Amino acid sequence: MTTLRESISRVKTVFKSVNEDAFLTDRYVYSVIKKYAAALIRRQDNENKLMQYDSLFEVLPYVELKEVDKIEADCAGIKTGCKIMRTRKKLPKVHDGSTGPIFRLVSSIDGTYNARQTRPQLYTAMTKSSTFKYNKNVYWWYKNGYIYIPAIQWEAVSIEGMFAEPTDGFCKEDGEDTECTVMQDTSFNIPDYIMAEIEQLVQQELITLGKIPSDNSDNSQNILR
Figure 1 (spheres, rainbow, N blue to C red):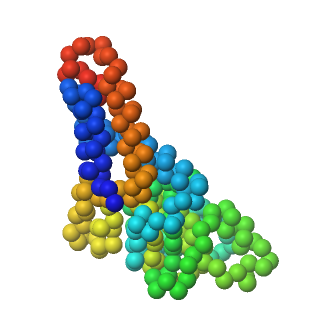
Figure 2 (cartoon, rainbow, N blue to C red; figure 1 turned 120 degrees about the horizontal axis):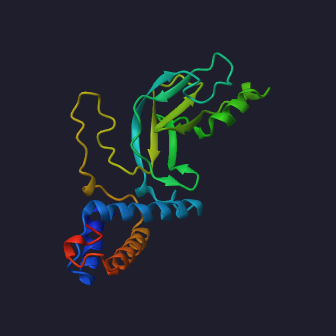
């Protein structure tokens, strides 16, 4: 799996072979990579081609939950008595797919029960059905970086997602050394064949920009600085 540092280096090498006087920062190249990565990830997700790649997904094996009120969970219409749990800490950023953040699994920590993804409005409507009392499924939804799970007694969940930032410090207790992997050294959780297409698109854009004449002929005023 390609690291972010490797991808940026390849893009800059190709660009400098075309315009050796231009200057590119890693931050700028990364911003262009992210733009094309987001578009191609959504395309692959829409075509149902992501879930088969185990290497794209990381598991957070023990994510603590806390009880929250119905207003925060966007389901004020649920009748009283429903306990709603939420992940205690905000999750690491997740890549967006065609229908939202890409998760493959939310389950009990022992793997016995797999929760089903839904929306708070849909769950609220389900609870008003006369047959809902026979529904034994566990449901969850995602909002503002947190996962919400109603009507359970669990203290924690296991989450498998396509995370867009380092996760190595997430499950440590508050106050512990939570230093994470340097972002540039993290694997870009994207299949290599998609990464190659992303890099080609980035190189084409940067080369095109590099050929646009600047208002000031001084190279120090290059638009890519």
